[in-house]
Image 1 (cartoon, rainbow, N blue to C red):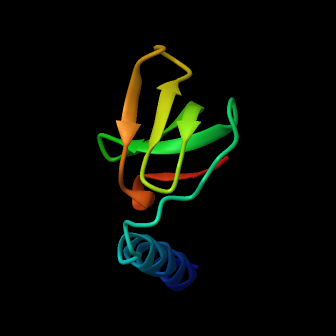
Image 2: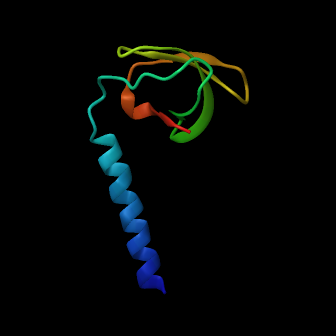
Length: 79
C-alpha cells in the first residue's frame, strides 16, 4: 500500500505544478455572486464573485467578508 500512496502523492504534486505553470492571463469570467475558490496564504478559501472581467476579478471571502482583487488566473478556480 505505501507504493500506491506515494504514487497518489506524486500525482497530486504534478497536478499542482501543472496548475501553477498555466498562463496567468486571460482571467476566467465568472457570474456575479458565483461561488469560487481563491488561493490565499497557500490555502484555497471559498469566496463570492463581486465583479469579473478578462483583466481581473473582485471577490469577497465568505468566512470573514474581506474583499480583494485578483489579477492572476492561477489564484482562482470554480467551486
